[in-house]
Length: 119
Image (cartoon, rainbow, N blue to C red; front, side, top):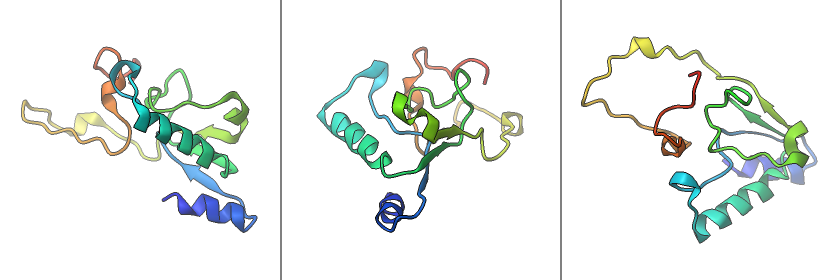
């Protein structure tokens, strides 16, 4: 997953990285040495990318807002594209026994336990 951007940089090719998370922390912004190290390594790694694509809405409507931190010097090399596919939650029946699985991102970061407004 991470080798492509470094390989592109090493071969002097354009490298693009698609992600919805470049920052890790616990509920209410808690952190630990592992997350601090991981955050440092991810930001270092993203320096090798020519551009970072985030398949999400731009702020203030960003769904991944608690998982994304973009340094000021990287804002021009970052694009929010909106979702890659249309999702209609009305197609699903939600019951007491519904299991939610998050692949990437951490939904517990929303301060009130709900999705950010507007979504």
